Length: 115
Length: 114
Image: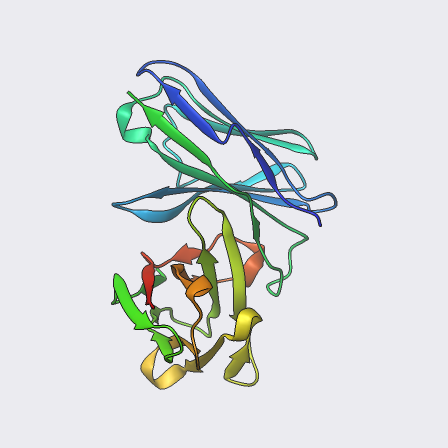
């Protein structure tokens, strides 16, 4: 059963530290999404890639967040420096292509706590 | 800009009773609509999706949803809920369906009473 995997599942860090979250999309999927879930804002799209190229990162704070896909099997989301307001659950999702009928498959999320 | 409203933050239903979760969307053209479910500590799982055609959509786990353009609604229904249905339910809309980013509602927390 193919799944999206995310590491770490939980991360506690102190303000100012760098945080890196990793995502392994389902093999063969060429679209990767990053979402953030908070109590106040709900689920928000941060950025997404197709064929490893960024398509939209308008939802991401540019000064401290960066997203990359070093290869087709790995997507990363980095926060540097981290702040308490970044505490949230970060979800990665992958999709098989560029069709409107595609389904996005979500990973289990990384729960980030910034003290 | 597209948006999704789920008016009910919490809903409590007795086991075996019917369920309807409300979803209203705002979008200029024909939307692509989704319902996802999130169990505690888990990611989101797709229940069903609407793109075109029949306005009554069948999904997994016995769920269905009806698209009503005149009411800008896409309500989720189940005739008889089970204790395992307790979870968070999210409605989402996409301008390009699943190919691009989705806009989610704030979610409805479903509680099942014995």
